[in-house]
Amino acid sequence: MRKLVYYVAVSVDGFIAGPSGEFDFYPAAPDMAEHQLTEFPETIPVQARPHLGLTDAPNRRFDTVLMGLGAYRPGLDAGIPSPYPHLEQYVVSSSLPAADDPAVRLVRADPLGLVRELKQQPGSGDLWLCGGGRLAAELLPEIDELVLKRYPVVAGGGIPAFAGPLRPRPFAPVETLTFSHGGTVTTYRPAG
View 1 (cartoon, rainbow, N blue to C red):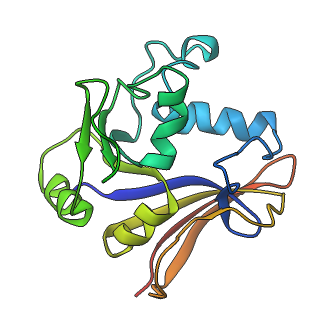
View 2 (cartoon, rainbow, N blue to C red):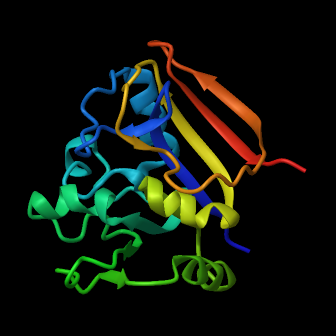
C-alpha cells in the first residue's frame, strides 16, 4: 500500500511558514539542498527544475502531491498553475473557484477519504503531503511518515506544521541527518 508522507520544512519552533506564507527566512546550506535534490528531486517545482539540472530527473519517492491552498497559492500567484506536472496533483480547498490547469485536481471536501482511496490505488510512488498546516492536521490519522527538514531558525509565529485540534499521535524517529548549518532532516514513523 502507498504511504502518505508529510515532507516539509519547519522552523525550530514548529512553523512551516510565516503568518503570510513567507518561507524566505530559512537559512540555506548547500549540503541540505543537495540532499533534497538527490533524495527528493520530485519535490522541486517545475520553474526551478531546469536551473537545477532536474528537467528529466525521475521521481524517486513520490508520484502524487497533495497541497492545501496556502501551499498551492505561491505558484498560482507567480503564474504557475501546475507546479508539479511530473506528479499527480491535488489541491484541497473549499474557496478556490477552480483549478487553472486540467492537470491539477481540485478537492473541495473529504481529503481524508481521498487519501484513503489513493492509498488503495496502484502507483509508482508514495503520496507527498507538501502542506499546509490545516490539511496536515486533518490528514494526521493517515500520515504514515513524517520527514521534517528542520532549519536552525526560530520563526516566532506563523503557520504551524499542524494547525488543528489537540489530537496527540506518537511518532518515533528512525533517522536523523545533520547538515553544515546545524539543520536536520529527521524521518519519523508512527510509534506503537
